Image 1 (cartoon, rainbow, N blue to C red):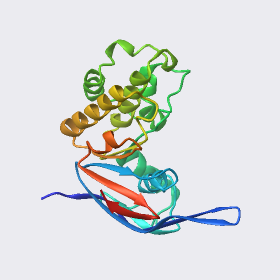
Image 2: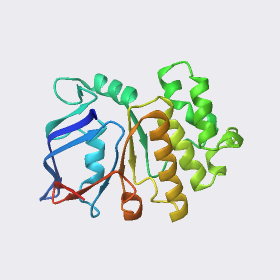
Image 3: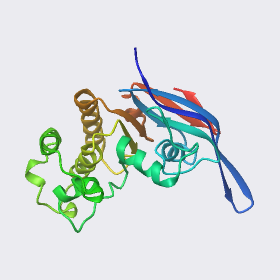
Length: 225
């Protein structure tokens, strides 16, 4: 029996642009099972990234709650505990990769461990580096890498803490179609090897159609695609 690992309950979020009120999310419910790959799609400005950020604890909803692996993100917990849950349970892959150009690839990959002053899991680290074919790039600086290589570094960094959930915001937006499809291959291999649940926001329907499930954000609501 599949286990529910992430659940949004009656999530609402409204933005005010001058005198205009934009209802990005309107009492949204969403349940995601452990090990699923879910694509979130919709028109620009539909609320896809807002939903992803709320699911990951980066943006606080106006109302509602998110349950991550049995624990609330918003009901009765403070910012410090929310940050701890993010670090323990969630990995992020951003469209711009958010690598630090002043440090080498290996240091970028290890950054979450260094921030928390935790010991490295060198065996697991080597598995990731080998799977993502980064062995020869460890001493490079990010600006010396191709877009696909930077993306693989971002994947390694997101997975190194062994998060239960990986969130990816337009991760193929700056890549050609072939490299984008390779990205999906890496994600599915990660899911098979390490059991992660993966949620992707994307405009690319070819990428979205490779997911186990497709969710469309439309007029502040979710529709199964």
